[in-house]
Image (cartoon, rainbow, N blue to C red; front, side, top):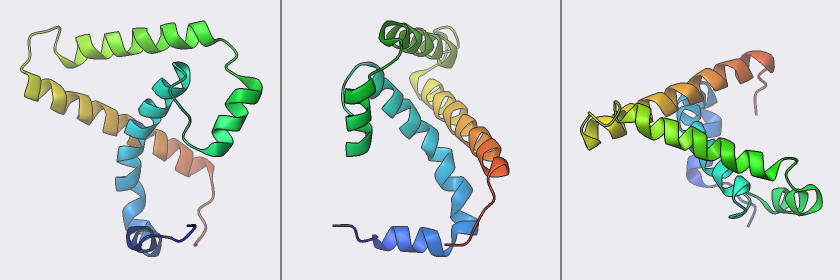
Length: 117
């Protein structure tokens, strides 16, 4: 419908405080969208869908191999080479993923001038 939700209005109003916590979770979304795009499971937006249909992926097989290698390594790493408990492994994964999102956000934020909305 094009209208902002109450949460979006709140997040924009208090952007100075909500920017980094939201970006902690952005990495999870980026991983999800990368997986969906690589394996043709959908696009995040209609525009992305049209772009993907028009251009496609430059190296579709390498995209899939890269994703499989990445997730295989993440499973091995986050389980402590299969020695940690599932709960500890899950917490390790989310800590690593959210930290990565924060680090990427710092790079992104420093390279762009912030403007009030």
